[in-house]
Image (cartoon, rainbow, N blue to C red; front, side):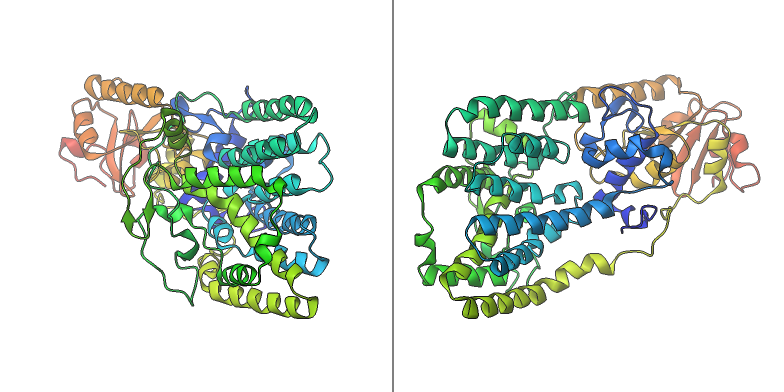
Length: 518
Protein backbone atom coordinates (compact mmCIF):
# COMPACT_ATOMS: atom_id res chain seq x y z
CA UNK A 1 0.00 0.00 0.00
CA UNK A 2 2.97 2.34 0.48
CA UNK A 3 4.20 1.88 -3.10
CA UNK A 4 3.21 5.14 -4.83
CA UNK A 5 2.41 3.41 -8.13
CA UNK A 6 0.42 0.56 -6.59
CA UNK A 7 -3.23 1.42 -7.26
CA UNK A 8 -4.59 -2.14 -7.47
CA UNK A 9 -5.88 -2.06 -3.88
CA UNK A 10 -7.87 1.11 -4.66
CA UNK A 11 -10.05 -0.36 -7.42
CA UNK A 12 -13.21 -1.12 -5.46
CA UNK A 13 -15.81 0.48 -3.23
CA UNK A 14 -15.38 3.96 -1.89
CA UNK A 15 -11.61 3.62 -2.31
CA UNK A 16 -12.21 3.73 -6.07
CA UNK A 17 -14.22 6.93 -5.61
CA UNK A 18 -11.38 8.55 -3.69
CA UNK A 19 -8.62 7.47 -6.07
CA UNK A 20 -10.56 8.41 -9.21
CA UNK A 21 -11.25 11.77 -7.63
CA UNK A 22 -7.51 12.32 -7.27
CA UNK A 23 -6.70 11.04 -10.78
CA UNK A 24 -9.21 13.36 -12.46
CA UNK A 25 -8.08 16.24 -10.27
CA UNK A 26 -4.47 15.64 -11.25
CA UNK A 27 -5.39 15.59 -14.95
CA UNK A 28 -7.42 18.81 -14.81
CA UNK A 29 -5.91 22.24 -15.44
CA UNK A 30 -5.55 24.52 -12.46
CA UNK A 31 -8.58 26.64 -11.74
CA UNK A 32 -10.10 28.69 -8.98
CA UNK A 33 -10.48 27.68 -6.30
CA UNK A 34 -7.38 25.45 -6.45
CA UNK A 35 -9.44 22.46 -5.37
CA UNK A 36 -11.79 22.67 -8.38
CA UNK A 37 -11.97 19.45 -10.40
CA UNK A 38 -13.96 20.09 -13.62
CA UNK A 39 -13.27 16.86 -15.55
CA UNK A 40 -15.04 14.46 -13.19
CA UNK A 41 -18.78 14.98 -13.55
CA UNK A 42 -18.55 17.72 -16.22
CA UNK A 43 -21.76 19.68 -15.49
CA UNK A 44 -21.95 17.95 -12.10
CA UNK A 45 -18.30 18.49 -11.22
CA UNK A 46 -17.29 20.03 -7.93
CA UNK A 47 -13.93 19.68 -6.24
CA UNK A 48 -11.36 17.34 -4.78
CA UNK A 49 -12.91 18.06 -1.36
CA UNK A 50 -16.37 16.80 -2.35
CA UNK A 51 -15.06 13.50 -3.63
CA UNK A 52 -13.32 12.87 -0.28
CA UNK A 53 -10.02 13.12 -2.10
CA UNK A 54 -8.00 14.47 0.86
CA UNK A 55 -7.10 17.98 -0.33
CA UNK A 56 -4.42 18.14 2.38
CA UNK A 57 -2.29 15.85 0.22
CA UNK A 58 -4.01 16.17 -3.17
CA UNK A 59 -3.22 19.84 -3.71
CA UNK A 60 0.50 19.52 -2.85
CA UNK A 61 0.66 16.34 -4.94
CA UNK A 62 -0.83 18.17 -7.92
CA UNK A 63 1.80 20.88 -7.54
CA UNK A 64 4.46 18.16 -7.67
CA UNK A 65 2.66 16.22 -10.40
CA UNK A 66 5.33 16.69 -13.12
CA UNK A 67 7.83 14.87 -10.93
CA UNK A 68 5.53 12.13 -9.66
CA UNK A 69 5.11 8.72 -11.29
CA UNK A 70 2.06 7.79 -13.34
CA UNK A 71 -0.05 6.41 -11.80
CA UNK A 72 0.43 7.78 -8.30
CA UNK A 73 -1.42 7.35 -5.03
CA UNK A 74 -0.82 8.93 -1.65
CA UNK A 75 -3.34 6.90 0.31
CA UNK A 76 -0.92 4.34 1.73
CA UNK A 77 1.31 7.08 3.12
CA UNK A 78 -1.74 8.87 4.49
CA UNK A 79 -2.89 5.79 6.36
CA UNK A 80 0.58 5.25 7.80
CA UNK A 81 0.66 8.89 8.90
CA UNK A 82 -2.78 8.48 10.46
CA UNK A 83 -1.61 5.52 12.53
CA UNK A 84 1.49 7.39 13.67
CA UNK A 85 -0.38 10.55 14.66
CA UNK A 86 -3.16 8.51 16.26
CA UNK A 87 -0.59 6.98 18.56
CA UNK A 88 1.32 10.22 19.11
CA UNK A 89 -1.64 12.33 20.14
CA UNK A 90 -3.11 9.54 22.27
CA UNK A 91 0.21 9.37 24.11
CA UNK A 92 0.12 13.17 24.55
CA UNK A 93 -3.44 13.09 25.91
CA UNK A 94 -2.50 10.40 28.42
CA UNK A 95 0.49 12.42 29.57
CA UNK A 96 -1.70 15.49 30.05
CA UNK A 97 -3.89 13.30 32.25
CA UNK A 98 -0.80 12.67 34.40
CA UNK A 99 -0.14 9.14 33.19
CA UNK A 100 3.39 7.79 33.37
CA UNK A 101 5.27 7.14 30.15
CA UNK A 102 4.64 3.40 30.13
CA UNK A 103 0.95 3.80 30.84
CA UNK A 104 0.76 6.47 28.12
CA UNK A 105 2.31 4.02 25.66
CA UNK A 106 -0.47 1.57 26.44
CA UNK A 107 -3.02 4.33 25.86
CA UNK A 108 -1.45 4.97 22.44
CA UNK A 109 -1.49 1.26 21.66
CA UNK A 110 -5.17 0.92 22.52
CA UNK A 111 -5.96 3.99 20.40
CA UNK A 112 -4.52 2.43 17.24
CA UNK A 113 -6.49 -0.80 17.65
CA UNK A 114 -9.80 0.95 18.32
CA UNK A 115 -12.36 -0.92 16.17
CA UNK A 116 -14.01 2.29 14.97
CA UNK A 117 -10.66 3.44 13.56
CA UNK A 118 -9.63 0.14 11.98
CA UNK A 119 -13.11 -0.32 10.48
CA UNK A 120 -12.84 3.07 8.77
CA UNK A 121 -9.34 2.57 7.30
CA UNK A 122 -10.31 0.48 4.24
CA UNK A 123 -13.68 2.17 3.83
CA UNK A 124 -13.34 5.97 3.91
CA UNK A 125 -9.66 6.75 3.82
CA UNK A 126 -9.72 10.51 4.37
CA UNK A 127 -12.15 9.97 7.23
CA UNK A 128 -9.55 7.70 8.83
CA UNK A 129 -7.78 10.81 10.13
CA UNK A 130 -9.18 10.27 13.61
CA UNK A 131 -5.98 11.71 15.02
CA UNK A 132 -7.40 15.23 14.60
CA UNK A 133 -10.08 14.38 17.17
CA UNK A 134 -7.48 13.17 19.64
CA UNK A 135 -5.46 16.29 18.86
CA UNK A 136 -8.52 18.37 19.75
CA UNK A 137 -8.83 16.52 23.05
CA UNK A 138 -5.14 17.16 23.67
CA UNK A 139 -5.50 20.92 23.11
CA UNK A 140 -8.47 20.97 25.46
CA UNK A 141 -6.68 19.01 28.18
CA UNK A 142 -3.31 20.78 28.04
CA UNK A 143 -2.37 22.00 31.48
CA UNK A 144 -0.45 24.82 29.82
CA UNK A 145 -2.77 26.81 27.52
CA UNK A 146 -2.05 26.03 23.85
CA UNK A 147 -0.24 28.63 21.79
CA UNK A 148 -2.50 30.96 19.86
CA UNK A 149 -1.69 29.29 16.54
CA UNK A 150 -2.52 25.73 17.61
CA UNK A 151 -6.32 25.69 17.29
CA UNK A 152 -6.27 27.61 13.96
CA UNK A 153 -3.70 25.16 12.61
CA UNK A 154 -5.74 22.14 13.70
CA UNK A 155 -8.99 23.57 12.33
CA UNK A 156 -7.41 24.58 9.02
CA UNK A 157 -5.69 21.22 8.55
CA UNK A 158 -8.89 19.35 9.39
CA UNK A 159 -10.81 21.47 6.88
CA UNK A 160 -8.45 20.05 4.25
CA UNK A 161 -9.14 16.48 5.41
CA UNK A 162 -12.89 15.94 5.92
CA UNK A 163 -15.89 18.06 6.86
CA UNK A 164 -17.23 15.53 9.37
CA UNK A 165 -13.98 15.55 11.32
CA UNK A 166 -13.94 19.34 11.09
CA UNK A 167 -17.37 19.63 12.73
CA UNK A 168 -16.19 17.56 15.69
CA UNK A 169 -12.91 19.46 16.02
CA UNK A 170 -14.78 22.77 16.04
CA UNK A 171 -17.11 21.42 18.72
CA UNK A 172 -14.09 20.55 20.88
CA UNK A 173 -12.68 24.02 20.24
CA UNK A 174 -15.91 25.64 21.45
CA UNK A 175 -15.67 23.57 24.63
CA UNK A 176 -12.09 24.75 25.09
CA UNK A 177 -13.11 28.37 24.59
CA UNK A 178 -15.77 28.08 27.28
CA UNK A 179 -13.41 26.30 29.64
CA UNK A 180 -10.53 28.78 29.30
CA UNK A 181 -12.48 31.98 28.62
CA UNK A 182 -10.73 35.32 28.98
CA UNK A 183 -9.43 37.82 26.45
CA UNK A 184 -7.70 35.07 24.53
CA UNK A 185 -11.00 34.17 22.87
CA UNK A 186 -11.18 37.58 21.20
CA UNK A 187 -8.06 36.74 19.20
CA UNK A 188 -8.63 33.00 18.79
CA UNK A 189 -12.19 33.15 17.43
CA UNK A 190 -11.41 35.13 14.25
CA UNK A 191 -8.21 33.13 13.70
CA UNK A 192 -9.95 29.75 13.91
CA UNK A 193 -12.98 30.78 11.89
CA UNK A 194 -10.82 32.61 9.35
CA UNK A 195 -8.49 29.65 8.86
CA UNK A 196 -11.44 27.26 8.55
CA UNK A 197 -13.36 29.31 6.00
CA UNK A 198 -10.27 30.13 3.96
CA UNK A 199 -9.23 26.48 3.67
CA UNK A 200 -12.77 25.33 2.88
CA UNK A 201 -12.89 27.87 0.07
CA UNK A 202 -9.47 26.92 -1.31
CA UNK A 203 -10.21 23.20 -1.38
CA UNK A 204 -13.54 23.80 -3.16
CA UNK A 205 -15.96 22.85 -0.43
CA UNK A 206 -18.37 25.64 -1.29
CA UNK A 207 -20.35 25.83 -4.51
CA UNK A 208 -22.89 23.00 -4.61
CA UNK A 209 -26.52 24.02 -4.32
CA UNK A 210 -27.25 21.67 -1.44
CA UNK A 211 -25.22 19.54 0.98
CA UNK A 212 -28.20 17.40 1.94
CA UNK A 213 -28.04 13.65 1.37
CA UNK A 214 -30.30 10.75 2.23
CA UNK A 215 -29.62 8.66 5.31
CA UNK A 216 -30.16 11.00 8.26
CA UNK A 217 -31.87 8.94 10.92
CA UNK A 218 -30.56 5.67 9.46
CA UNK A 219 -26.76 5.94 9.69
CA UNK A 220 -26.91 6.64 13.41
CA UNK A 221 -25.61 5.67 16.80
CA UNK A 222 -27.45 2.82 18.44
CA UNK A 223 -28.17 3.41 22.13
CA UNK A 224 -26.64 0.02 22.88
CA UNK A 225 -23.40 1.08 21.17
CA UNK A 226 -20.83 -0.02 23.80
CA UNK A 227 -22.02 -3.62 23.50
CA UNK A 228 -22.64 -3.82 19.75
CA UNK A 229 -19.56 -5.50 18.27
CA UNK A 230 -20.52 -5.55 14.56
CA UNK A 231 -18.26 -8.57 14.21
CA UNK A 232 -15.30 -6.96 15.99
CA UNK A 233 -15.17 -9.51 18.80
CA UNK A 234 -14.67 -13.23 18.87
CA UNK A 235 -15.54 -13.50 22.55
CA UNK A 236 -18.68 -11.38 22.69
CA UNK A 237 -21.79 -12.21 20.66
CA UNK A 238 -22.75 -10.06 17.68
CA UNK A 239 -25.97 -8.64 19.09
CA UNK A 240 -28.78 -7.62 16.71
CA UNK A 241 -29.14 -3.99 15.71
CA UNK A 242 -30.86 -1.88 13.07
CA UNK A 243 -29.72 -2.31 9.47
CA UNK A 244 -27.71 0.87 8.81
CA UNK A 245 -26.43 1.88 12.23
CA UNK A 246 -22.99 0.42 11.48
CA UNK A 247 -21.87 4.03 10.84
CA UNK A 248 -22.11 4.42 14.61
CA UNK A 249 -19.79 1.47 15.25
CA UNK A 250 -18.10 2.46 18.49
CA UNK A 251 -17.48 -0.80 20.29
CA UNK A 252 -14.49 0.01 22.53
CA UNK A 253 -13.08 -3.52 22.52
CA UNK A 254 -13.04 -6.10 25.31
CA UNK A 255 -9.86 -4.69 26.84
CA UNK A 256 -11.25 -1.19 27.22
CA UNK A 257 -14.59 -2.50 28.49
CA UNK A 258 -12.69 -4.43 31.17
CA UNK A 259 -10.62 -1.36 32.09
CA UNK A 260 -13.76 0.78 32.36
CA UNK A 261 -15.32 -1.79 34.68
CA UNK A 262 -12.17 -1.92 36.81
CA UNK A 263 -12.02 1.89 36.98
CA UNK A 264 -15.65 2.08 38.11
CA UNK A 265 -15.35 -0.71 40.67
CA UNK A 266 -12.10 0.67 42.10
CA UNK A 267 -13.55 4.16 42.53
CA UNK A 268 -11.10 5.77 40.10
CA UNK A 269 -13.70 7.61 38.02
CA UNK A 270 -15.12 9.93 40.72
CA UNK A 271 -11.58 10.96 41.65
CA UNK A 272 -11.16 12.34 38.12
CA UNK A 273 -14.11 14.72 38.38
CA UNK A 274 -13.06 18.39 38.08
CA UNK A 275 -14.79 21.61 37.07
CA UNK A 276 -12.70 21.95 33.92
CA UNK A 277 -14.39 18.85 32.52
CA UNK A 278 -17.87 20.40 32.45
CA UNK A 279 -17.67 22.20 29.04
CA UNK A 280 -16.16 19.12 27.43
CA UNK A 281 -18.78 16.86 29.01
CA UNK A 282 -21.59 19.07 27.72
CA UNK A 283 -20.15 19.16 24.20
CA UNK A 284 -19.58 15.41 24.14
CA UNK A 285 -23.14 14.83 25.36
CA UNK A 286 -24.43 17.10 22.58
CA UNK A 287 -22.40 15.21 19.98
CA UNK A 288 -23.77 11.90 21.24
CA UNK A 289 -27.34 13.18 21.06
CA UNK A 290 -26.70 14.32 17.50
CA UNK A 291 -25.18 10.89 16.74
CA UNK A 292 -28.32 9.14 17.99
CA UNK A 293 -30.27 11.28 15.48
CA UNK A 294 -33.99 11.95 15.27
CA UNK A 295 -34.71 8.20 15.06
CA UNK A 296 -33.25 6.55 18.17
CA UNK A 297 -32.93 2.81 18.38
CA UNK A 298 -31.73 0.34 20.94
CA UNK A 299 -30.52 -2.97 19.66
CA UNK A 300 -32.84 -4.04 16.83
CA UNK A 301 -35.73 -1.88 18.06
CA UNK A 302 -36.57 1.51 16.59
CA UNK A 303 -38.01 3.87 19.18
CA UNK A 304 -39.85 6.13 16.76
CA UNK A 305 -39.05 9.51 15.26
CA UNK A 306 -38.51 12.56 17.42
CA UNK A 307 -39.42 16.09 16.35
CA UNK A 308 -36.24 18.12 15.90
CA UNK A 309 -35.74 21.79 15.03
CA UNK A 310 -35.42 22.51 11.33
CA UNK A 311 -31.81 23.64 11.82
CA UNK A 312 -30.90 20.30 13.38
CA UNK A 313 -32.69 18.50 10.54
CA UNK A 314 -30.73 20.50 7.96
CA UNK A 315 -27.41 19.83 9.67
CA UNK A 316 -28.30 16.16 10.07
CA UNK A 317 -29.10 15.82 6.38
CA UNK A 318 -25.81 17.50 5.49
CA UNK A 319 -23.72 15.11 7.57
CA UNK A 320 -26.07 12.17 7.02
CA UNK A 321 -24.00 9.58 8.91
CA UNK A 322 -24.43 11.14 12.31
CA UNK A 323 -23.40 7.99 14.16
CA UNK A 324 -19.78 9.05 13.68
CA UNK A 325 -20.16 11.94 16.11
CA UNK A 326 -19.61 9.63 19.08
CA UNK A 327 -15.91 9.29 18.19
CA UNK A 328 -14.52 12.04 20.48
CA UNK A 329 -16.25 10.43 23.46
CA UNK A 330 -15.02 7.01 22.38
CA UNK A 331 -11.39 8.14 22.31
CA UNK A 332 -11.67 9.94 25.62
CA UNK A 333 -13.14 6.76 27.10
CA UNK A 334 -10.39 4.63 25.57
CA UNK A 335 -7.47 6.77 26.71
CA UNK A 336 -9.15 7.67 30.00
CA UNK A 337 -9.79 4.05 30.95
CA UNK A 338 -6.10 3.22 30.53
CA UNK A 339 -5.02 6.29 32.49
CA UNK A 340 -7.49 5.78 35.33
CA UNK A 341 -6.35 2.22 35.95
CA UNK A 342 -2.71 3.17 35.48
CA UNK A 343 -2.99 5.91 38.10
CA UNK A 344 -5.16 3.94 40.52
CA UNK A 345 -2.93 0.86 40.67
CA UNK A 346 0.78 0.56 41.33
CA UNK A 347 2.91 0.02 38.21
CA UNK A 348 3.83 -3.55 39.15
CA UNK A 349 0.11 -4.38 39.04
CA UNK A 350 -1.18 -1.90 36.47
CA UNK A 351 1.34 -2.57 33.71
CA UNK A 352 0.87 -6.37 33.59
CA UNK A 353 -2.89 -5.85 33.71
CA UNK A 354 -2.74 -3.39 30.80
CA UNK A 355 -0.52 -5.77 28.84
CA UNK A 356 -2.87 -8.70 29.33
CA UNK A 357 -5.97 -6.72 28.40
CA UNK A 358 -4.26 -5.18 25.37
CA UNK A 359 -3.24 -8.64 24.15
CA UNK A 360 -6.77 -9.91 24.79
CA UNK A 361 -8.35 -7.08 22.74
CA UNK A 362 -5.77 -7.50 20.00
CA UNK A 363 -6.52 -11.21 19.63
CA UNK A 364 -10.26 -10.75 20.05
CA UNK A 365 -10.56 -8.25 17.20
CA UNK A 366 -7.78 -9.59 14.96
CA UNK A 367 -10.07 -11.61 12.64
CA UNK A 368 -12.03 -8.44 11.79
CA UNK A 369 -9.06 -6.24 10.98
CA UNK A 370 -7.31 -9.01 9.07
CA UNK A 371 -10.15 -9.12 6.54
CA UNK A 372 -8.78 -6.08 4.73
CA UNK A 373 -5.33 -7.58 4.42
CA UNK A 374 -6.74 -10.89 3.27
CA UNK A 375 -8.42 -9.22 0.29
CA UNK A 376 -5.55 -6.99 -0.79
CA UNK A 377 -4.53 -7.78 -4.39
CA UNK A 378 -0.95 -8.05 -5.53
CA UNK A 379 0.67 -4.65 -6.17
CA UNK A 380 -0.02 -3.33 -9.67
CA UNK A 381 0.02 -0.03 -11.53
CA UNK A 382 -3.31 -0.77 -13.25
CA UNK A 383 -6.84 -1.61 -12.22
CA UNK A 384 -8.59 -4.78 -13.29
CA UNK A 385 -11.33 -3.75 -15.69
CA UNK A 386 -14.18 -5.46 -17.53
CA UNK A 387 -13.69 -3.07 -20.47
CA UNK A 388 -11.30 -5.28 -22.42
CA UNK A 389 -12.46 -4.88 -26.04
CA UNK A 390 -10.02 -3.12 -28.40
CA UNK A 391 -12.93 -0.82 -29.16
CA UNK A 392 -12.23 1.34 -26.10
CA UNK A 393 -8.65 2.17 -27.04
CA UNK A 394 -9.70 2.75 -30.66
CA UNK A 395 -12.36 5.23 -29.58
CA UNK A 396 -9.88 7.28 -27.57
CA UNK A 397 -7.34 7.20 -30.41
CA UNK A 398 -10.04 8.33 -32.87
CA UNK A 399 -10.66 11.50 -30.89
CA UNK A 400 -13.62 10.60 -28.69
CA UNK A 401 -12.90 12.63 -25.58
CA UNK A 402 -16.08 12.45 -23.52
CA UNK A 403 -17.96 9.61 -21.82
CA UNK A 404 -21.56 10.03 -20.74
CA UNK A 405 -24.35 7.82 -19.43
CA UNK A 406 -28.06 8.01 -20.19
CA UNK A 407 -29.73 8.14 -17.74
CA UNK A 408 -27.36 9.84 -15.29
CA UNK A 409 -25.10 7.33 -13.55
CA UNK A 410 -24.05 8.90 -10.27
CA UNK A 411 -23.80 8.27 -6.57
CA UNK A 412 -23.50 5.27 -4.30
CA UNK A 413 -24.29 2.00 -6.05
CA UNK A 414 -23.66 3.40 -9.53
CA UNK A 415 -21.46 1.74 -12.14
CA UNK A 416 -18.79 4.40 -11.90
CA UNK A 417 -15.46 2.66 -11.31
CA UNK A 418 -14.75 0.92 -14.64
CA UNK A 419 -16.05 3.77 -16.86
CA UNK A 420 -14.28 6.34 -14.71
CA UNK A 421 -10.97 4.49 -14.84
CA UNK A 422 -11.28 4.12 -18.61
CA UNK A 423 -12.03 7.81 -19.02
CA UNK A 424 -9.23 9.13 -16.85
CA UNK A 425 -6.61 6.83 -18.35
CA UNK A 426 -7.62 7.81 -21.90
CA UNK A 427 -7.79 11.56 -21.49
CA UNK A 428 -11.59 11.81 -21.37
CA UNK A 429 -13.92 13.71 -19.09
CA UNK A 430 -17.07 12.00 -17.91
CA UNK A 431 -20.37 12.61 -16.17
CA UNK A 432 -20.32 9.06 -14.76
CA UNK A 433 -19.17 9.94 -11.27
CA UNK A 434 -19.56 9.08 -7.63
CA UNK A 435 -19.31 12.42 -5.84
CA UNK A 436 -19.73 13.11 -2.15
CA UNK A 437 -22.37 15.76 -2.80
CA UNK A 438 -24.29 16.69 -5.96
CA UNK A 439 -26.04 19.92 -6.89
CA UNK A 440 -29.68 18.81 -7.34
CA UNK A 441 -30.40 21.60 -9.82
CA UNK A 442 -27.39 20.70 -11.96
CA UNK A 443 -28.31 17.01 -11.90
CA UNK A 444 -31.91 17.78 -12.93
CA UNK A 445 -30.72 20.07 -15.72
CA UNK A 446 -28.37 17.41 -17.06
CA UNK A 447 -31.14 14.80 -16.97
CA UNK A 448 -33.40 17.18 -18.90
CA UNK A 449 -30.70 17.77 -21.52
CA UNK A 450 -30.30 14.05 -22.03
CA UNK A 451 -34.05 13.52 -22.30
CA UNK A 452 -34.12 16.19 -25.01
CA UNK A 453 -31.29 14.45 -26.85
CA UNK A 454 -33.26 11.21 -26.85
CA UNK A 455 -36.24 13.09 -28.29
CA UNK A 456 -34.38 15.05 -30.96
CA UNK A 457 -31.28 12.99 -31.71
CA UNK A 458 -29.03 16.00 -31.11
CA UNK A 459 -26.22 14.03 -29.53
CA UNK A 460 -22.77 15.45 -28.89
CA UNK A 461 -19.97 14.65 -31.34
CA UNK A 462 -16.85 12.82 -30.13
CA UNK A 463 -18.84 11.43 -27.20
CA UNK A 464 -19.40 7.84 -26.15
CA UNK A 465 -22.77 7.18 -24.54
CA UNK A 466 -23.45 4.25 -22.23
CA UNK A 467 -27.19 3.55 -22.35
CA UNK A 468 -29.77 1.55 -20.50
CA UNK A 469 -32.33 -0.41 -22.55
CA UNK A 470 -35.05 2.32 -22.71
CA UNK A 471 -32.45 4.88 -23.79
CA UNK A 472 -31.10 2.49 -26.43
CA UNK A 473 -34.60 1.98 -27.84
CA UNK A 474 -35.02 5.74 -28.05
CA UNK A 475 -31.66 6.14 -29.80
CA UNK A 476 -32.69 3.67 -32.51
CA UNK A 477 -35.09 6.25 -33.92
CA UNK A 478 -32.16 8.59 -34.63
CA UNK A 479 -29.53 6.24 -36.04
CA UNK A 480 -27.71 7.40 -39.13
CA UNK A 481 -25.33 5.52 -41.44
CA UNK A 482 -21.95 5.16 -39.78
CA UNK A 483 -23.31 5.31 -36.23
CA UNK A 484 -22.51 2.70 -33.62
CA UNK A 485 -25.09 1.09 -31.35
CA UNK A 486 -23.89 -2.18 -29.91
CA UNK A 487 -23.35 -4.10 -26.71
CA UNK A 488 -19.64 -4.12 -25.90
CA UNK A 489 -18.26 -5.76 -22.77
CA UNK A 490 -21.76 -5.92 -21.32
CA UNK A 491 -22.54 -2.24 -21.88
CA UNK A 492 -24.78 -0.71 -24.52
CA UNK A 493 -22.62 1.84 -26.35
CA UNK A 494 -23.75 4.55 -28.76
CA UNK A 495 -21.40 6.83 -30.72
CA UNK A 496 -22.11 9.13 -33.63
CA UNK A 497 -19.94 8.00 -36.54
CA UNK A 498 -18.53 5.19 -34.43
CA UNK A 499 -19.15 2.25 -36.76
CA UNK A 500 -15.49 2.04 -37.96
CA UNK A 501 -14.38 1.53 -34.35
CA UNK A 502 -15.71 -2.05 -34.33
CA UNK A 503 -14.34 -3.09 -37.71
CA UNK A 504 -12.91 -6.63 -37.54
CA UNK A 505 -14.15 -7.09 -33.97
CA UNK A 506 -17.12 -9.28 -34.87
CA UNK A 507 -19.56 -6.61 -33.70
CA UNK A 508 -22.36 -5.34 -35.95
CA UNK A 509 -22.46 -1.57 -35.45
CA UNK A 510 -26.16 -1.35 -36.31
CA UNK A 511 -28.08 -4.18 -34.60
CA UNK A 512 -31.23 -2.09 -34.85
CA UNK A 513 -30.99 -2.47 -38.63
CA UNK A 514 -31.20 -6.25 -38.39
CA UNK A 515 -27.68 -7.07 -37.20
CA UNK A 516 -26.75 -9.45 -34.43
CA UNK A 517 -25.08 -7.09 -31.93
CA UNK A 518 -21.85 -7.70 -30.17
